[in-house]
View (cartoon, protein in one colour):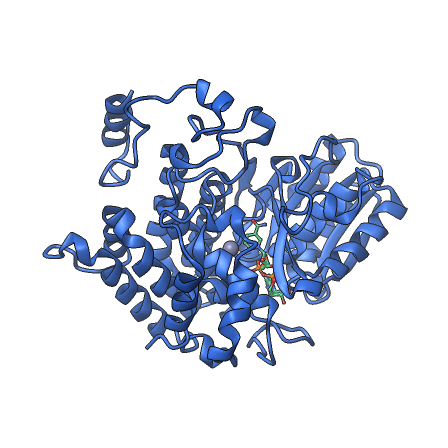
Amino acid sequence: MTSLLAQQQRGSCSEAPGPIPQTPPRNWPGAENAALGKTEYAFEMAISNIRYGEGVTKEVGMDLQNLNARKVCVMTDKNLCQLPPMKAVLDSLTKNSITFQVYDNVRVEPTDQSFMDAIEFCKKEEFDSYVAVGGGSVIDTCKCADLYASSPESEFLDYVNAPIGKGKPVKVTLKPLIAVPTTAGTGSETTGVAIFDYKELQVKTGIASRAIKPSLGLVDPSHTLHMPERVMANSGFDVLCHALESYTALPYHKRSPCPSNPVNRPAYQGSNPISDIWAIHALRIVAKYLKRAIRNPEDREARAHMHLASAFAGIGFGNAGVHLCHGMSYPISGLVKNYKAKDYHVDHSLVPHGLSVVLTSPAVFTFTAPMCPERHLEAAQIMGANTSTARIKDAGLILADTLRKFLFDLNVDDGLAALGYSKADIPSFVKGTLPQERVTKLSPRPQTEEDLSALFEASMKLY
Ligand SMILES: NC(=O)c1ccc[n+]([C@@H]2O[C@H](COP(=O)([O-])OP(=O)(O)OC[C@H]3O[C@@H](n4cnc5c(N)ncnc54)[C@H](O)[C@@H]3O)[C@@H](O)[C@H]2O)c1
Ligand SMILES: [Zn+2]
C-alpha cells in the first residue's frame, strides 16, 4: 500500500509533493485500536461540492429552483449588500422567480451575540434554503443559523466545541446552503466549521461538524475583483496558514483517542495523504500568485487563482485541521484593543482573522520544524527559499525567515506589538489558547504553557 501510494503520486502529476507525504504506518494498527481507545488507524475524507467559473453566480437562481426552494434566506453583511456580488445573486434569484428575504446584519468577525441574532431571525422565518454571500464571517453565520433553525430545541452551547461548549454531534439534517465566497481566504464554502468570538471569554471558538458543510460552493472569481487591498492580503494569509498548518499537522495515525464509533471521528483528523495533496497545491498557488493579487486588484489571473487556492486549502485543512497559528490566533482576535483594520468597513475594532494567524507563523514553524523538518523545508522552498545547500536541522529557521521576508514585502504590521499588545498580554493569550485543544493537539510538537508564552513573545516583533 505504501509503495502504491508513492507510485501513484510520483507517476500521476509532476506537481505532486516532492517527498512522499507521511505514509500510512507500516504496522497498520487496525480497528482493534478503537476498542482500546488508542491512537487512530483511519482517516475520512469528506467531500465538498464546488462549482467554479467566472460569472457562475448567475446559476444560483436555477439551483434554488432545482431544489424546489420556496422561501430562501440570502445572508450577507452591510458592506457587501451594496456591492456587485450581492447584485449578481439577487438578479439571478429574481430572474428565476425565487422568493427570498435578505439578512444583512452579519457582523464582520462574528460574535456569539451576532450568531444568535441571525439564528433568531431564521428560526422565526422558517426558511427552506440559504444562500450566503460573503467572506468567512457571512458563510459561518449562515451555517450556524441553518444549524440551530434546523434544531430548534438545542441550546447555543450544545454544538460549540468542547471544552467551551458541549461539543454534541449534529444528528439533525440541515436545509440546503449555497455559499458564494467573496474573499479568497477562509475556504468556509468547503468546510464544516463556523467560528465566532465568544465575548464572555474574550476568545474565539466555533462549531465543527461535517453536517454543517455547505451543500454547494459557487466559486465565482469575478467577485474577488472588488476586494480591497488589505482584505485580499489578510484573507490570502489565511490560505497560506491553512496550507502550511494542515501540511505540518500531526499525522492522523498519531492522533488519539481512536473513536469507538465513526460518528465521533473529528473533522480535524491530522495530516493525511489526501489532504496533503490539497495543502501543498494550495501553497504553490499562494507562492505564485498572492503577491500579484494583493498588489494589483485588476490582475484577474492572480485573483482567480487565489480564489481557487482558498477552496483547495479549505478541502485540505477541512479534513486535516490546522494547529498552533490558528489556536493562538483566537485569543489574539478575542482580546483586540483599539486596532482598526485598514480596508475593513466596520465601526468596531478588529484584528482580521488572516492577520491574527500569520503573525505567529515564523515563531510557530520554528518550533514545530524538528518534528517533520522535511516538510518545513519543502514549504520554504515552495515559498521561494533557496534550499539547495540547506541543512535539514535549519528547516524551521529557513521557513521562518522566508515567511518574515514575504510579510515584510507585503507591508504587514511588525508583529503583535504593532497591533497594540505588549508582554503584559501574554498570560491572557496563553489562557485563551489552552481551551483550543481541538487544534493545538494537532500540532506535531506538544506544547507547554511556557512554550506558548515563548511563542507569543517571539511574535511581538517580526522584523
Ligand atoms: N469556516 C471556516 O472554515 C473558517 C476558516 C477560517 C476563518 N474563518 C472565519 O472567517 C472570518 C473571516 O472571514 P474573511 O477573511 O473571509 O473576511 P470577512 O468575511 O470577515 O470579510 C472581511 C471584510 O471584507 C469585506 N468583503 C468581503 N468580500 C469582499 C469583496 N469581494 N469585495 C469587497 N469587500 C469584501 C467584508 O464586507 C468585510 O468588511 C473570521 O471570523 C474567521 O474566524 C472561518
Ligand atoms: Zn483560518
